Image (cartoon, rainbow, N blue to C red; front, side):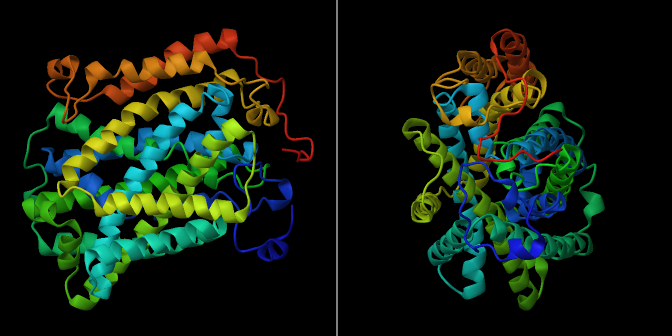
Length: 475
C-alpha cells in the first residue's frame, strides 16, 4: 500500500466508481468510519426523527429508550454491511449481484434510488431553510444553494466526503451539545419525563423509527469502507461504523424527543426556526443554523454519492461496463442532485407526517434486502465472492437469481398484515393495538426462507476471486 504522503498527492477528484479499489489506492483506518457516520447522524433530520416518536404519542422517556433499542438493532445490521467493504473493495449494491444476479439486483436498486431521492429532498428542505436564515435569502434560494454545495462535495468524492464528516463530527458535538444544555436550562424537562404511561404501540413505533433510520444506510454503507486496506479487521470496521452511527443518531434523536416534549405544536410548525430560537441570541442562532447546514451537507452528500452509485450499477447491469469517465460521473451526480432539489421545492407542507410514513415505508422494502445480503454473505457464501462474475451476466451469478428475488418478494408481502401506515393498517396490527412490528417480521421471515433454499441452490467459490489484475494482499 502507498504511504500517506504518496496518497496525499493523489488527484483531489475521485476517479473510481463501481470498479474494485486496488490495494495501491487503499488507505485509512476504521476510525474514519466512526467520524463519518457520527457526523452524518448529528443533524437536523435525526432530531426530527426522534421528535416524531413524541409527536405521535410516546412519552419522552419511553421514546428515548425505544429509539436506543431501534438504533442498536438497526445499527448492528447496518455495520455488518459496512464490514464487507474492506474485503470486497466494492460499492454495496454491486456486491448484492452475488445474491440477486446481475440484472436481478436492479429491482432493489430502483427502490434504493427512490430512498436517496426522498432523504436528499427532505434534508434539502431543512438545510435550505437554515442556509436562507444565515444569508437572509428566500428559502427557495437557500435550497438551490445547498444543492450546489452537495453536488460539489459529491463530485469531488470519497476523500472530501470523509473530510466533511470529520468537520461535522466536531461541529455536531458543539452545536447539539449546546442545544441539549439549552433545553434543560430553558424548560422544566422533569415535568415532561414520565408524564405519560407506557404504551406498547407508541413504544414500538419509536423502536421502528430508530431501526428504520439505521437500516436505510445499509444499501450504501460499504461505499465508504471499501477504500480501507484489505487487511483491515472486519470487527474494527464493524465497531467503528456501529458506534459512530448509533451514538450520533441517538444523541440527535434524544434531543429531538425532548424538544418535541417541551415545545408541543411549536416545533411541529417550524423545526429549523424553533431550534434557532432555542439557541438564544442572534449570533449563536446563526452558528446553530451553520451546524444544521454542515450536518445536512454530510448526509446529503452521501445520498447524492450513493444515488450515483446505484444509477451507475443499474445502467452497467445492461451494458456490461465497470467504470465511466470523470465527466460522466459528474453528470450523474449533478443530475441526481437536480432531481432531489426539484422534489424539495415541491415538498408538501405536512413534512413531519409524510416523513414518518416515508421512513417506515422504506423499512418495509429494505429489511428483506438486508436479510438476504447478510445471510448470504456471512452464512452461505461465508465471505467468498467471485468479483469478476459480478460484472458478467453470463458468469457464476447469472442474470437473475430466483431464490433471492422470490425470498425478497415474500419478505415484502408478509409484512403487509403488520403495517401501521397512514394509508393502510394491517389486520394483525389492529389486533396488536396499532403496534408496527413489520420490520421484525420482514427480517426474520426473509432469512428463514432464504437460508435453507440458498444452501441448496447457491454455488459460492471455494475462496475469494479477485480480478486477475488485482494482487491479493495477505490478511
